[in-house]
Length: 268
Image (cartoon, rainbow, N blue to C red; front, side, top):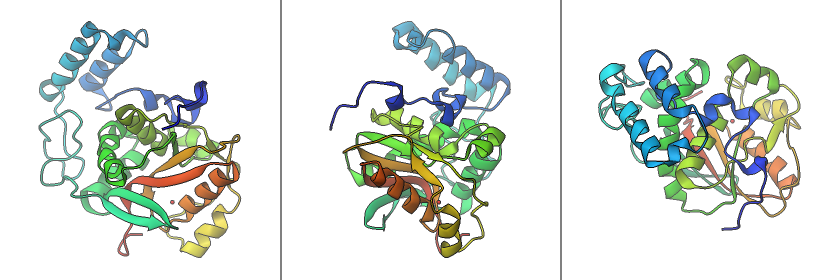
């Protein structure tokens, strides 16, 4: 794997991701949120010490007792590792693999059932905390592809939509996957220069027309091997536009990783 260039652009942080992109939050509020804030505040390297790791482990271990987690699929208590978002009954199965215009692609599962509920909560339910457990689920699709890359790049949000939502869910997922794999995340590599209509409900042709010229790379990415990260791949139109923008900047998109893929029964 090529070594990543120095500079903030290759770090797993960035304005477009939102503050939650670098905060390992496991619950949105209350005791769990306070515990998370306690272990993530202070100097950036405090958690690298044995004491920092011990305090962190103790704080998150206490969440099961002080603020039990609940399955985002069925609402039942979800016991086990703090990274889990689902109970055993709702947990996704094997990753879904396909080709997106000749580019290998993999997702945690199809966009339906408990996974659809989880993605919807992350995206529209003001639940950026779910990026931690859901981002951990991306490790299976990543492993399935078995590809090396120089950087992870999330699908961007338009600045207005980013302000309204407060975070880019794809950037949060990319940052979490970066922390698990050691591959840098370039959270601001792409930007939307034109706002588009909401894509759900549009067919592929309408999506393509909406997205044409809407996404560009911020700067040259000559010879960089990129894995594109998104929350849901529906028609593939958003993926196509992002791939074109990255290729125009000199990069090579080697794979696409997503939380979910929409099937024929589901509704970028």
